[in-house]
Image (tube, rainbow, N blue to C red; front, side, top):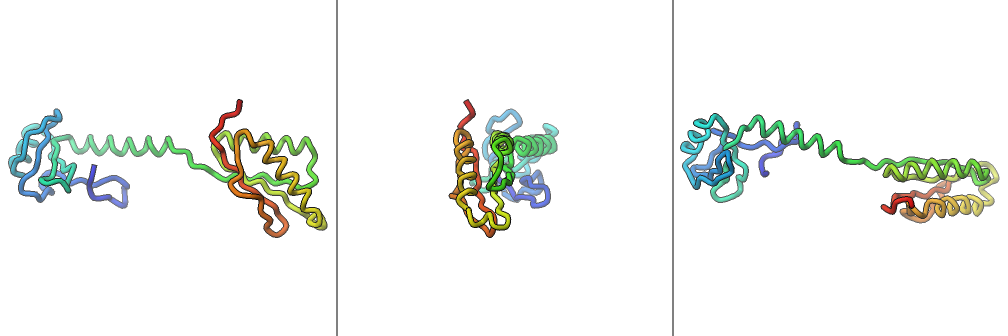
Length: 182
């Protein structure tokens, strides 16, 4: 449906009844049958006889297409559809898992399991290895932890880009690949 977008409400504002300015319009009745090209006053009278509204649904067509419908009911259904579509959308969030380069095996497995849960929910995961003090001298340990983590998640997630060093932190972002866990 075409119309003027109402910025406040987010729905399309259609011209109804006397707001339609075209002298002749193509009319579709309430059952969906074409009634042909009629004068605007005749079309409005036809809609009023049925107790419904004349709504301009295609203003750019020549002549504009108008339909005889209950406008209030139509708007209610449109807003209901918009709410349903917003509900169905999943907004991907970025979750973060922090580790040290000398992490214990059990702690590593716990973090891996938590990240796996985030990925299965459809979220992205930033894995960060934080270096303290002189640990930065052996950045390869952190790189090893990150690569082990990526290998553990390779069946359901992939790296968006290679691991990057920002100051004393080494991080990588993992995103769901679409493959399901077997």
